[in-house]
Image (cartoon, rainbow, N blue to C red; front, side):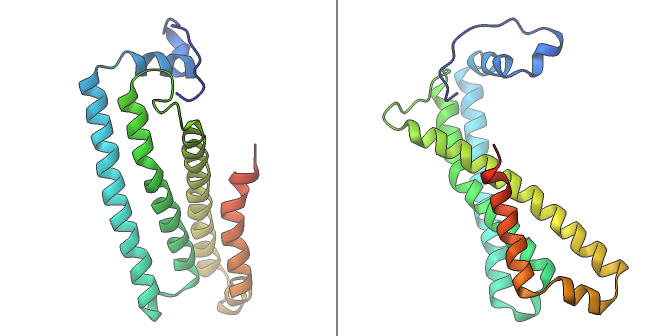
Length: 170
C-alpha cells in the first residue's frame, strides 16, 4: 500500500499469492469489509497491548517470575506491545482503501509502520526460538551448564540479538 504501484493484474493459479494480486484483492474489498478488518485490528491492538502489559508487570513485580526463560517471555511481550502500537496505522491504511498511503503528508509513517512490523515479527520469532533452546538446554543439560550458559550478560546479548537481527538484515 505504501509504494503507490498501479495496475490491475489478473489473479489466476499461482499468482494468487503475489504482491500485485494482494493489492488487487485489497482494492476490490468493499468499504464494509475493510471496516470489519480495521475493527479487528483495533480489537487486537487493545487486547494485545493490555495482555502483554500484564505479562511485563507480573514479571517485573514478582521476584519468583524473574527466570532466564521469562527474560525471553518479557522480551516477546515487549515486541508484541510495540507491534500493537503500530497496528492502528494498519487500520488507517485499510480504511484508506486505495493502493496509496491515505496520509500523503506522512509517508514516513507508512515506512515506519512497515519497519516496526518486520522487526517485531522477527523479534517474536527469535524469542520463540530462544525459549525453545532455553527449555531444551534446561531439560537435557546439567543445572551447572544451564547456569553457565544463561548468565545475565549472555541473556542481555541474546535479547539484543533478537532485536538487531531483523532490523539490520535487508
